[in-house]
Length: 306
Image (cartoon, rainbow, N blue to C red; front, side, top):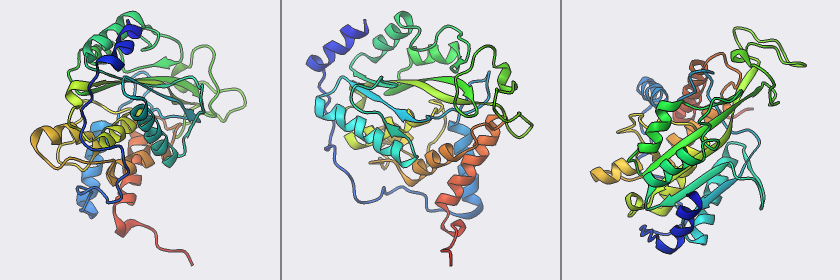
């Protein structure tokens, strides 16, 4: 079914997006302008809304090493632009992109029938979405997967995570919630675990009809954001300067972001600087919030060294 859906896209899709896939030199108009306690409060609220982790492991995942984006359903030039944009954003947080012929681990499908494609993948390609419980592989669970399948959002995403040792080695046998000491590794404690969560793959489906009229660069950055971070699609981010409000701002006539904002970049910076072996995701969320606040508040930035 996936093959039929994707194969039909190139012939039938009219992705009438305004604007061209060009870089923007001017900063977004809706970046953060508050500082101090108010900023800290906003940051903590945002992180609490969007940051999610599989309940079984209670650790936030991120990419380790290299990514390999695959985009289908657009003209070749636009598919390459999206892949390049994701690679650019990944590079900013220290993640590299594999070369030609790599095994795709970020799969993005643009289709005028998003619900049909999502349902087909969940029903017919269950290994792709980790439908069945597999040792060391984790998702948000069956309920959120059903939400992914039936979503009416312009963009939906599904992350599959893998438990690995603290130094990135694949595990054998029961991970026991990360409490088992791995051979050659440091023992776990109340401050760290012997395991961490890495992304194994991310599946993203774009509803082409709902995406019409969105500037292409903004869409590419939106896809980069949900490719590089596991985010709650139901997180409330209204009024905050984030690319995640792209479609909501468009639909309400608000100021639409044209690219990732400093807020978004600070979140990614915080995620990829957070402690990977933290005991729970709460510790990682605090790390992210602290990094975001330091990044966004010029009064907290360290001065030049002598």
